[in-house]
Image (cartoon, rainbow, N blue to C red; front, top):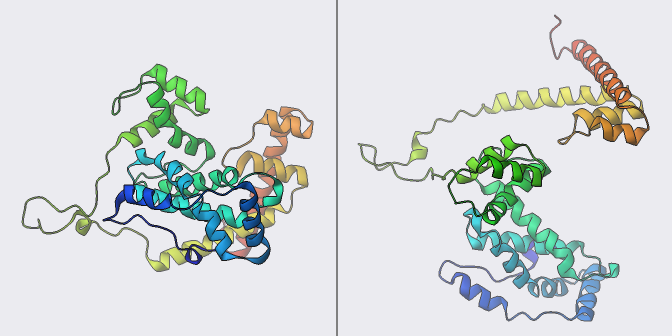
Length: 299
């Protein structure tokens, strides 16, 4: 099922939110047995009409969840539209035989779709890609409100410490994210004020500093070559060495020595030794292969 296969009510510029909310109320809620039969019809026969009924009966749920994300300065209509896409994905993957209602399953997909849209849309550079940073981004406003911290005012050291502890992030990450969320956004389409060039926009004065197509292609080819060398070098490690190296150096949130010590039933110092040895073996193999293939020059 794709977004094109279903026609849903949409928020229009002249209709407004009130009209949309009124329109989606005409779609009835489903009884458990009716929901189950519709889901089976979609799952077994690809019945698009059944999928449509499943989606439209949950539009009020999507709107309710989307309203909870209004504090990020994005149009409500866009949040609802993204939530509806998440709802469609939920219907596509829903298995009625597992015994729970579609709404319970769909809530995760709706929130995930809206949150990803917010992260893509915000004009901040590198808000964060790790689970902890995303958690900080989507919970900082709420916790600020619980602390009754004044919007725009700086957090006190005590508040920073409390938030860092609660969300399991560093104090520096809390301070940095709070400053980013408090910074106003400026549109590049805003007209210039005053001067002979007042008819233009700010974006007209931006210089394109992005690499040329040839540079991007060369960098892409080099990256692929180095990545291929890394994968080949990893093949020289045994299973334990490979897993420890990946968990310690090649994931967003590295595992601790203590966690790997318990997992492999060895001491923390032994884990550290294996990590260092595995890294050196990979580094040597990559270097030798790169020299052989002419990717890097010999020293």
